[in-house]
Image (cartoon, rainbow, N blue to C red; front, side, top):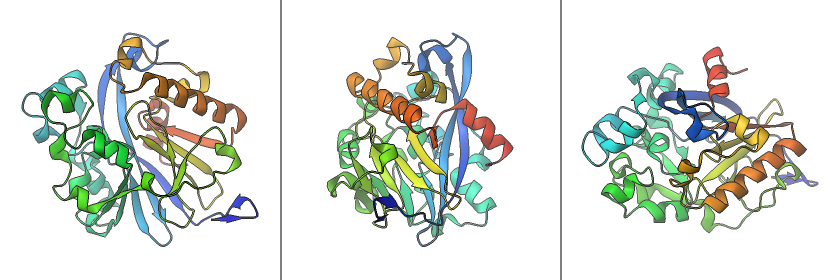
Length: 289
């Protein structure tokens, strides 16, 4: 919540984790990159909230992904971006290793519906899913090649997904703090002001990022796939022109990139984390600092 124009600090702890990776040419993700194949991690966030308990921001890959993409046309997904995944890397397995049972997770925030972000949803039977209605409406009827075209694999979502979903963009927008002045719309995820969803469309319809402050005072902005690397927002570098073919809205992508670059330049105290950034993957390997 706000107090005198400033957002109150909450007792939030945050862990950045990784559930598998795919490979692709760096040039596709970064116009100035090389044509070499690089590993692209599927990062996800574990937020320890003082009252809501463990909260996930996306889920990364999961064991379900292999089965879901075993037949054409969904097999095209893993052929274009070959995936490496071990069962112990799944979100549910990593939570169990931390003493958290998947059944105890009551909140999962989904930035968008690409398979590498929702593959683990079925492992959390009691979770409410927070997403944008615009995102769900765009993909929910898509099947076959039409789904693969936009990175969606329908069978990865639990059958009762719609009954467990909360659509954030149907609520009233909230005032954003000064450090997010580059963005237009924010939505209070839990209603306590601790987690703010920030609209970041372009890469996917209805994609959003998540802003919060940790117990130590760090300001974190998880920007999902608004960019694929930290270098992209630092230097305002676009992906390869071919990658734009995959985006539903090229103009919106460029606009979001500009907003992230402006936030980085004007508010360097904000830690911006893209979901597929190799730099952050190295941090994950070392342990969250």
